[in-house]
Image (cartoon, rainbow, N blue to C red; front, side, top):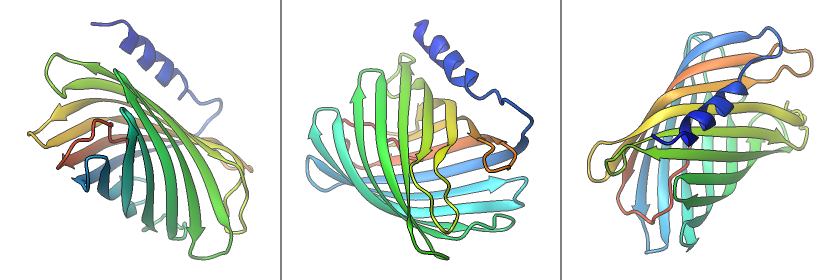
Length: 229
Protein backbone atom coordinates (compact mmCIF):
# COMPACT_ATOMS: atom_id res chain seq x y z
CA UNK A 1 0.00 0.00 0.00
CA UNK A 2 1.23 3.50 -0.84
CA UNK A 3 2.63 5.55 2.05
CA UNK A 4 0.89 8.63 0.66
CA UNK A 5 -2.53 7.79 2.09
CA UNK A 6 -1.43 7.27 5.73
CA UNK A 7 0.57 10.49 5.55
CA UNK A 8 -2.36 12.42 4.10
CA UNK A 9 -4.70 10.97 6.73
CA UNK A 10 -2.35 11.93 9.56
CA UNK A 11 -2.02 15.49 8.25
CA UNK A 12 -5.79 15.72 7.85
CA UNK A 13 -6.53 14.56 11.41
CA UNK A 14 -3.78 16.68 12.92
CA UNK A 15 -5.84 19.72 12.10
CA UNK A 16 -8.80 18.71 14.27
CA UNK A 17 -7.06 18.96 17.65
CA UNK A 18 -8.76 21.86 19.46
CA UNK A 19 -6.76 24.70 20.96
CA UNK A 20 -9.10 24.98 23.96
CA UNK A 21 -12.07 23.23 25.52
CA UNK A 22 -14.98 22.74 23.16
CA UNK A 23 -18.43 21.23 23.23
CA UNK A 24 -18.84 17.98 21.30
CA UNK A 25 -21.66 16.25 19.49
CA UNK A 26 -22.31 12.88 17.86
CA UNK A 27 -24.14 13.01 14.55
CA UNK A 28 -25.33 11.05 11.52
CA UNK A 29 -25.07 12.65 8.08
CA UNK A 30 -27.01 11.14 5.16
CA UNK A 31 -26.96 12.27 1.53
CA UNK A 32 -28.55 10.96 -1.66
CA UNK A 33 -27.36 12.15 -5.08
CA UNK A 34 -29.04 11.22 -8.36
CA UNK A 35 -26.87 12.13 -11.36
CA UNK A 36 -28.59 12.36 -14.76
CA UNK A 37 -26.92 13.12 -18.11
CA UNK A 38 -28.33 15.83 -20.37
CA UNK A 39 -25.67 15.70 -23.10
CA UNK A 40 -22.17 14.19 -23.27
CA UNK A 41 -20.79 17.24 -21.45
CA UNK A 42 -23.74 18.31 -19.26
CA UNK A 43 -25.35 16.58 -16.29
CA UNK A 44 -27.87 17.41 -13.56
CA UNK A 45 -27.44 16.21 -9.97
CA UNK A 46 -30.46 16.14 -7.64
CA UNK A 47 -29.55 16.16 -3.94
CA UNK A 48 -31.19 15.35 -0.62
CA UNK A 49 -29.45 15.72 2.76
CA UNK A 50 -30.51 14.99 6.35
CA UNK A 51 -28.37 15.43 9.48
CA UNK A 52 -29.16 14.06 12.93
CA UNK A 53 -27.61 15.27 16.19
CA UNK A 54 -27.61 14.12 19.81
CA UNK A 55 -27.35 17.70 21.11
CA UNK A 56 -30.04 19.01 18.76
CA UNK A 57 -32.49 16.25 19.63
CA UNK A 58 -32.85 14.47 16.29
CA UNK A 59 -32.88 15.75 12.72
CA UNK A 60 -31.61 19.33 12.85
CA UNK A 61 -30.92 20.08 9.17
CA UNK A 62 -32.35 19.07 5.81
CA UNK A 63 -31.25 20.25 2.38
CA UNK A 64 -32.87 19.78 -1.03
CA UNK A 65 -31.46 21.06 -4.27
CA UNK A 66 -29.87 20.53 -7.62
CA UNK A 67 -26.65 21.21 -9.49
CA UNK A 68 -26.06 21.70 -13.21
CA UNK A 69 -22.58 20.53 -14.24
CA UNK A 70 -20.77 21.25 -17.50
CA UNK A 71 -17.57 19.38 -18.37
CA UNK A 72 -15.34 21.94 -20.09
CA UNK A 73 -12.26 19.69 -20.40
CA UNK A 74 -11.16 16.21 -19.38
CA UNK A 75 -11.39 16.06 -15.59
CA UNK A 76 -12.69 19.65 -15.27
CA UNK A 77 -16.32 20.57 -14.56
CA UNK A 78 -18.10 23.87 -13.90
CA UNK A 79 -21.27 23.81 -11.81
CA UNK A 80 -24.11 26.09 -10.69
CA UNK A 81 -26.86 25.10 -8.30
CA UNK A 82 -29.47 25.89 -5.66
CA UNK A 83 -30.37 24.44 -2.26
CA UNK A 84 -33.17 25.00 0.22
CA UNK A 85 -31.94 24.51 3.78
CA UNK A 86 -34.25 23.89 6.74
CA UNK A 87 -33.42 23.80 10.47
CA UNK A 88 -35.35 21.90 13.17
CA UNK A 89 -35.59 20.92 16.84
CA UNK A 90 -33.02 22.73 19.03
CA UNK A 91 -31.31 24.31 16.03
CA UNK A 92 -32.60 27.90 16.14
CA UNK A 93 -31.00 29.05 12.89
CA UNK A 94 -33.33 30.51 10.27
CA UNK A 95 -34.04 28.62 7.05
CA UNK A 96 -31.92 29.57 4.04
CA UNK A 97 -31.91 29.65 0.28
CA UNK A 98 -28.45 29.08 -1.22
CA UNK A 99 -26.99 29.63 -4.64
CA UNK A 100 -23.59 28.15 -5.48
CA UNK A 101 -20.96 28.11 -8.18
CA UNK A 102 -18.09 25.66 -8.30
CA UNK A 103 -15.29 24.16 -10.33
CA UNK A 104 -14.18 20.55 -9.84
CA UNK A 105 -10.85 19.04 -10.93
CA UNK A 106 -10.25 15.27 -11.05
CA UNK A 107 -6.94 13.75 -12.04
CA UNK A 108 -5.60 10.38 -10.97
CA UNK A 109 -5.97 9.92 -7.23
CA UNK A 110 -6.61 13.60 -6.49
CA UNK A 111 -9.81 15.62 -6.74
CA UNK A 112 -10.40 19.24 -5.77
CA UNK A 113 -13.40 21.52 -5.63
CA UNK A 114 -13.58 25.29 -5.25
CA UNK A 115 -17.10 26.42 -4.34
CA UNK A 116 -18.67 29.80 -3.59
CA UNK A 117 -22.05 29.94 -1.80
CA UNK A 118 -24.44 32.89 -1.60
CA UNK A 119 -26.69 32.50 1.45
CA UNK A 120 -30.12 34.20 1.69
CA UNK A 121 -31.76 34.08 5.14
CA UNK A 122 -35.52 34.01 5.59
CA UNK A 123 -35.31 36.44 8.55
CA UNK A 124 -33.13 39.26 7.23
CA UNK A 125 -31.69 41.00 4.22
CA UNK A 126 -28.12 40.73 3.01
CA UNK A 127 -26.21 38.03 1.18
CA UNK A 128 -23.76 35.89 3.12
CA UNK A 129 -20.89 34.82 0.88
CA UNK A 130 -19.01 31.64 1.77
CA UNK A 131 -15.87 30.23 0.11
CA UNK A 132 -15.34 26.45 0.41
CA UNK A 133 -12.16 24.87 -1.00
CA UNK A 134 -12.05 21.05 -0.77
CA UNK A 135 -9.27 18.56 -1.48
CA UNK A 136 -9.72 14.77 -1.67
CA UNK A 137 -7.25 11.91 -2.07
CA UNK A 138 -8.39 8.43 -3.24
CA UNK A 139 -6.41 5.24 -2.71
CA UNK A 140 -7.66 2.39 -4.99
CA UNK A 141 -7.99 -1.02 -3.35
CA UNK A 142 -7.62 -3.22 -6.43
CA UNK A 143 -11.25 -3.38 -7.54
CA UNK A 144 -13.00 -0.84 -9.79
CA UNK A 145 -14.53 2.03 -7.75
CA UNK A 146 -13.37 0.55 -4.43
CA UNK A 147 -11.06 2.95 -2.60
CA UNK A 148 -10.07 4.53 0.67
CA UNK A 149 -10.32 8.29 0.71
CA UNK A 150 -9.44 11.32 2.82
CA UNK A 151 -10.72 14.86 2.33
CA UNK A 152 -10.41 18.30 3.89
CA UNK A 153 -12.74 21.27 3.43
CA UNK A 154 -12.41 24.79 4.86
CA UNK A 155 -15.19 27.38 5.25
CA UNK A 156 -14.08 30.99 4.73
CA UNK A 157 -16.59 33.82 5.23
CA UNK A 158 -15.52 37.12 3.62
CA UNK A 159 -18.42 39.29 4.87
CA UNK A 160 -20.84 40.02 7.72
CA UNK A 161 -24.64 40.09 7.48
CA UNK A 162 -27.35 41.57 9.69
CA UNK A 163 -28.90 38.14 10.15
CA UNK A 164 -25.82 36.63 11.76
CA UNK A 165 -22.98 35.66 9.42
CA UNK A 166 -19.61 36.80 10.76
CA UNK A 167 -16.54 37.15 8.55
CA UNK A 168 -13.56 34.88 9.17
CA UNK A 169 -12.43 31.26 9.08
CA UNK A 170 -15.58 29.60 10.42
CA UNK A 171 -15.00 25.84 10.35
CA UNK A 172 -13.29 22.87 8.73
CA UNK A 173 -14.44 19.37 7.84
CA UNK A 174 -12.17 16.34 7.67
CA UNK A 175 -13.38 13.00 6.39
CA UNK A 176 -11.85 9.51 6.27
CA UNK A 177 -13.75 6.72 4.61
CA UNK A 178 -14.21 4.06 1.98
CA UNK A 179 -15.88 4.32 -1.42
CA UNK A 180 -17.84 1.13 -2.17
CA UNK A 181 -19.58 0.14 -5.45
CA UNK A 182 -23.08 -1.19 -4.78
CA UNK A 183 -23.95 -1.85 -8.40
CA UNK A 184 -23.16 -0.73 -11.92
CA UNK A 185 -24.66 2.73 -11.38
CA UNK A 186 -24.70 2.99 -7.58
CA UNK A 187 -21.90 3.76 -5.15
CA UNK A 188 -21.56 4.75 -1.50
CA UNK A 189 -19.04 6.85 0.42
CA UNK A 190 -19.04 5.77 4.08
CA UNK A 191 -16.76 7.29 6.67
CA UNK A 192 -15.98 9.26 9.81
CA UNK A 193 -16.48 13.01 9.46
CA UNK A 194 -15.02 15.47 11.95
CA UNK A 195 -16.34 19.03 11.82
CA UNK A 196 -14.64 21.68 13.95
CA UNK A 197 -16.28 25.09 14.39
CA UNK A 198 -13.89 27.70 15.72
CA UNK A 199 -14.92 29.66 18.81
CA UNK A 200 -15.58 33.20 17.64
CA UNK A 201 -17.25 36.27 19.21
CA UNK A 202 -17.03 34.68 22.66
CA UNK A 203 -18.65 31.36 21.68
CA UNK A 204 -17.11 28.02 22.61
CA UNK A 205 -15.58 25.93 19.83
CA UNK A 206 -17.60 22.90 18.76
CA UNK A 207 -16.45 19.53 17.46
CA UNK A 208 -18.90 17.21 15.71
CA UNK A 209 -18.21 13.48 15.26
CA UNK A 210 -20.40 12.15 12.45
CA UNK A 211 -21.00 8.91 10.61
CA UNK A 212 -21.26 10.09 7.00
CA UNK A 213 -23.17 7.98 4.48
CA UNK A 214 -23.44 9.34 0.94
CA UNK A 215 -25.23 7.32 -1.76
CA UNK A 216 -24.82 8.27 -5.42
CA UNK A 217 -26.94 6.91 -8.25
CA UNK A 218 -25.05 7.77 -11.45
CA UNK A 219 -27.15 7.36 -14.57
CA UNK A 220 -24.40 8.59 -16.89
CA UNK A 221 -20.72 9.22 -16.00
CA UNK A 222 -18.83 12.22 -17.37
CA UNK A 223 -15.44 11.25 -15.96
CA UNK A 224 -15.49 13.97 -13.26
CA UNK A 225 -15.87 12.96 -9.63
CA UNK A 226 -19.06 13.94 -7.78
CA UNK A 227 -17.94 16.04 -4.79
CA UNK A 228 -21.02 16.97 -2.78
CA UNK A 229 -21.94 17.45 0.88
